[in-house]
Length: 432
Image (cartoon, rainbow, N blue to C red):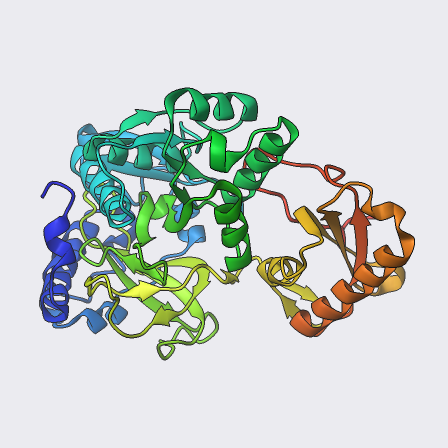
């Protein structure tokens, strides 16, 4: 079908054969990009005999893309480029990514495949609550929703009251949203006396754009009374749709007819065994305008072994466990913000928002976690408040192997964002 359904039924041997042929073609296309021309002079497409031979190709990093701006990685004539997106730039300067008409069609097909696997149909009303414009999150899902035949509402991000009004007025049954913003929507619903279970029609929610824990997923599901599915993507690979969960909700299926995935030790850059954490490295297989070879995503995942009950033999990866470049080093201990979230959401008393602050009084790193409470007025009960603070401190110490200071705040006391949540404030290198 138009969405690539046939590819879902491929056997493992068929996927491997497809990847070998596509990788050879990608190598030929990549040679046309100035940034790759010299780096690929010593390898021939005939050297690619199996998917594992991707390791013969050079790695590509964010710094390479920045150095090649604007045209260094463009492998197609400029007249064939019909769209340009910018990466979000959350970890540094933004970089441009180019697309031909065929690139955009295949991108929509990847996302549509994932939406269909989660049970979306042409009868659904799809409210897309991701940003449009240079950010890829909105448009990838938008065209996929229309490809399936959904009535698609390009709501964009922000303006929470209007978002809720659209859900109520048009019976939105499918959402695409950043997970931290989903909690914000639930908070506003609560304040306005709206019961998402009774007053809204949402049954499927796709989340992406920021790492989040399983506990946070369950909170969103419980709040909306809907199933929440993880979607993974990044601008350099087109955007969302690189890997998506099926109805089983146990791992994200990589679109292996479009992307070749490796999981490497971020230090040694050697493959890690299935089940062990490593950095996800991706090679595009169908990209015309801007093929990328072994792109270091910096996202930490593990491969999930075994066949999925859904029947797809495309490899599955875990949800994002953190990033190799946003790891915090606090008094010699490696800490990922997602570890903090996992620990906090073990407590029913903890609300929807938290902020990690790092500073360095007296030349010693200090980590403070500010946490909102779930119930207003709870802070007045000092005995219970102090007991809760001690329990959270112990849980964080157990999770992080690090002593942490905890501050408890009333609901709504911490700053909120209608985009990606700002979870870490690092003041250690600021002048005093």
